[in-house]
Length: 138
Image (cartoon, rainbow, N blue to C red; front, top):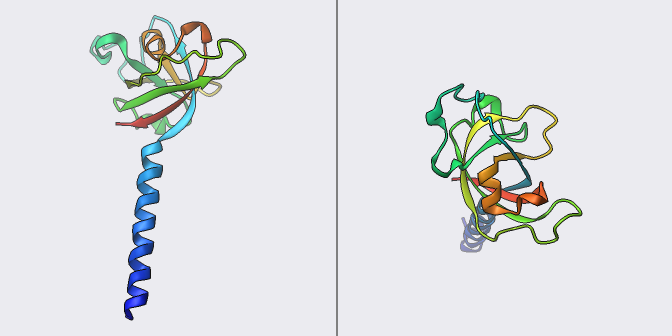
């Protein structure tokens, strides 16, 4: 292969690798809501009280990424990025949290992720009720 073609090939590989790493870092976006106790039984762990991590930082997955229960136990870094309604114009707290998926939110969920009340309060003002988020598996 001529050296010019080899350079072009390597340049294409580099650009594609850079774009993939940038895209993968971004994760996904959606909406987050919250739900209140009782939190059991859950679709992932039934009535097992050990399913809930410290600080009650857990969540429910919607059809957007439920994967027939394949996400049970996975952890997602979740960051509030802005309001999703006409309420508070600045509901976000400005810090990400990591939540564990413990349940399934059936079709018709308002949010992509339905956070525990404590988890939602860590990333946004609960009075907002719903916020735009970025989330990625960690």
